[in-house]
Length: 279
Image (cartoon, rainbow, N blue to C red; front, side, top):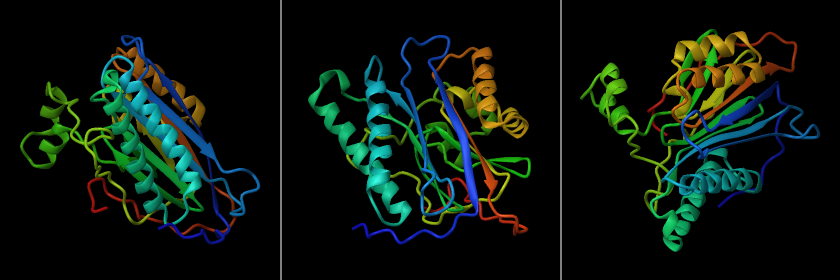
């Protein structure tokens, strides 16, 4: 059950940024979908909130594109319609997206077996909420340090977490693109959705991307790029870097900068959720 939203407090932060997506140098169809929206200027919170996502479809031919579009459309629509605690809203959005993808797979033979990753960030007031399934990624750059706040739901990532292989072995593994959790694969889904939001501070930068970027552009380069450039230029440079590295997959990236609205000194915050922590 979703209760009516209470009036939000005055926001101390605003978010600004953009997203780009490209089919890459090899594939004809772009099965990635990116979507983002900012709260309107008249929002009673007094700030500029954000909803952004990246979905990386899979299934071959047009099916992956359909799955990622269903996910993006469902999340963007329901996240604004449903009311209640943000983690519950995000869980309901992904559950409904999963249901619709599975339903489409059952009635259309060409869509059988399709699925998609989906990584969502919502900023409300001064707090960010994450919902994630698959191997697309969400990062936070704070004080010059880039941290992955999502958890890769891939076979090799699980093997690394279990201590069966090293991170270096994972990079060379022929199974590195095998996804173990995604929308559309099972009737029920288990996304990573932390119950507590992540407190933001001025100067933070949030990054969303598909594996078409993270597979070929390392974290150090991503960090240096988003620290040096404003969001739109950072997005374009990261996209260009992935294309220069071969662009063998669809490439999607979003960069969102957090700025302060108030002039008071800011209390440092270190409440950054660890990827793989308890939801």
